[in-house]
Amino acid sequence: MVQSILATLRTNGLKALGLAGLLSVSLPVMSAAEGEIKIGFLLKTMQEARYQTDKSLFTARAESLGADVIFDSSGNDPLRQLQQVEEMLDLGVDVLVLQPVNTATAGALVSLAHEQGIKVVGYDSMLQDGPLDVMVMQDSWAVGQLQAEAMVDWLKSNRGEVKGRVALIRGQPGDANAAALSSGALKVIADHPGLELVADRSHVDWSPDMARDTAENLLVEYDNAVDAFICNNSGLAFGVLAALSDEELASADQVFVAGSDADLRNVQLVASDVQALEVWKQIKPLAYEAADVAVKIARSPDAEISDLIGEYTLIDNGFAEVPTIITPVFAVSKDTIDATVIEGGFYTREQVYQN
Image (tube, rainbow, N blue to C red; front, side):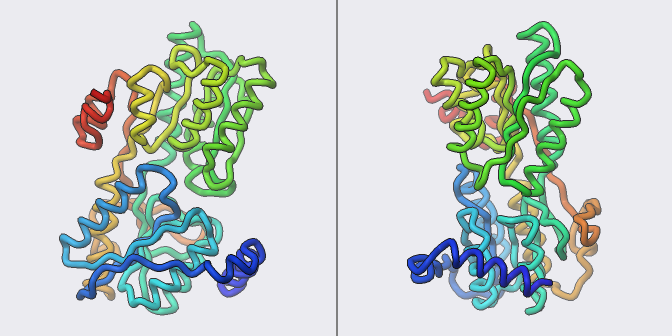
């Protein structure tokens, strides 16, 4: 099964890439100096601004613990991620920290690492139906819940009742993280019969441009009468706001828009009453926990995972119950910016308020 999935990834990817892709697909990996411990850190993308923070915090933490970090990102391309995993294994990493592009097939990448005796720490997005040694993630279900609960409060304040048209703007089709984010929101929506879910759309590569197209089409279909857009990340929310701006509706008083990841430009829009809500998924505890666990595993590869980590829960990913460390999330509205992302040191007051 594993070899079949890997072969499919290679075959489908090469067909899409064509001859030019074959000549250019192997990209250089950024490697630290040789050291006692090598940790591979592979993110699915650098498309969203937050991932620069993930990269820098993880690298700094791991290096402070005496490890070298080999970093790369995959541009939301599963074939490219496969090749990067193979490159990192060839470079002799002791542990791989992986944020999967495709959560449905990434179990094959973990199996590939396991074949060489390398353990894998899942990062941010839980892969499905595949082996995984340990997971470090934020509570994605709670993100969607926070977004939808804020929408309910907004409707009460701005419409006088919990009634209106809602669009759910999802990320990558089939992505487990997008599914969890959406499930939290859908539960709240289902609890309020006055809400009409007019769209539940996925967007390839978490594309802001596609989200903008979706929003534009919905605004045409409903004659601009869509009350709320709940978006799986900040980039998608930014795309929706671009469509609303074209109709002079980009205002937190007129249409509720929620994102997550707390990208700086979105937080600035929250501060400016353009966007209603962001969700701050603290990156430092996520990156630090992942780095700590990876280094501990590298130093004690034969130890039980449960003996190396602190508090955790077991989450069934369809293949096994995975020991999972969950980090907190916080709603960021205009009223809570100072108490969350600024007091938490994520952004400075000057960055947020641009003064």
